[in-house]
Length: 244
Image 1 (tube, one colour):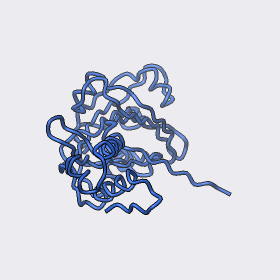
Image 2 (image 1 turned 180 degrees about the vertical axis):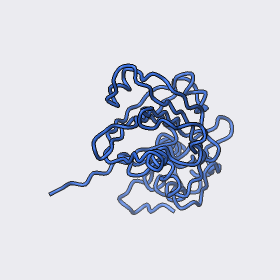
Image 3 (image 1 turned 45 degrees about the vertical axis):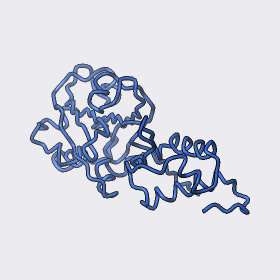
Image 4 (image 1 turned 180 degrees about the horizontal axis):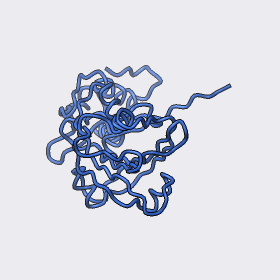
């Protein structure tokens, strides 16, 4: 219940109570929460105050509303660490989140100008263009597009295990291409028609796009990745260690 003698405002207390119920799994994902009227009566608050609290939690992504039905607990966002010390699949496995990878296609193409620049390739170089879709609990989470120079990994094909293994593991085990350094960028983007179709969202939906180039210990770039996440399914965690 609310502590009316506390210096903490009542609306903030209610917000913390609801957050605790979600964090402690008392209210499970996709479960309907009590109505605004029920919460107002339970905690002795005006309906307007309760509504404002609910709307803040909707804005924070903890709850979602369905017209004509009510308010529900949102699926928790997946936290992905930048500076990919481990692959996204490995991070999901570590969190106990079941995921699935589908290979959309793998083909040899002439490296686009931008990829030539990222991978320090001469004009006309061939690269493998590998496209995969990652799903969590059957729902699309991210599109993974990778470019690997054919001269470094000439025998990549559909039988290389893209649906079971991470690309970095395939490249290390089969071609001795081990990541020593990663350069990454992160930006928001709006879903194209094709991205919208793959990620089951509407065109123009907000996405998060992570791009990185991986280098060997000899500082040779050997893969460029572009990972496009649904913006409502992911949050990015940044961690810096200060030296000295």
